[in-house]
Length: 232
Image (cartoon, rainbow, N blue to C red; front, side):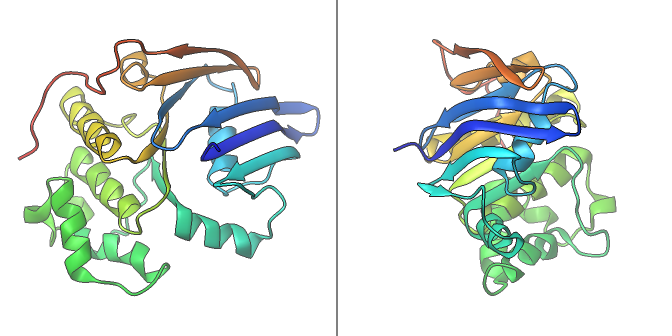
């Protein structure tokens, strides 16, 4: 059974079909990239998968459960318990330190635990920046805090929407390397990106066009790397 499956999923706004009968499967432990031009339906698809929005029709099966007809409260619980979200915009709370921003995700899931939050920051190479505020962190460091925040509740799937879109090349490589390590640990990753180089490090890429899956590509030489880097 696939971890995630979209069955004939459509999202309609008036006459606009943002998604038009999309069928996609994501296996447990797979790394999938989603590409497509602006307006192709990438973000709409990500919002529906991430339980941030509802499809107009179709089924969204997450770990065998159809979440497409769930209530708003139930979707909140699903996001909290099963999904780790990473965005292009960091959405960090400016008056909280890095470790407190990570602990905030714990607050909505169970009980904040500073030790666990520090361990999550250590996984992304930011233990020494734990007490810094977002304004004291570079863009790459802020995105790595977001990765730690997404990991803290041990989600079944990580969804990342343009996670390197605001980063320079060096920090892009660091974030991709983090994804590679997560994938090695068995994490399921779904990453929306405009960057072909970032897309090509995944195992598989699907390309959306006009709300439909135009084609998909298997990366025969999958390594998960842009190039080798080591987090300090």
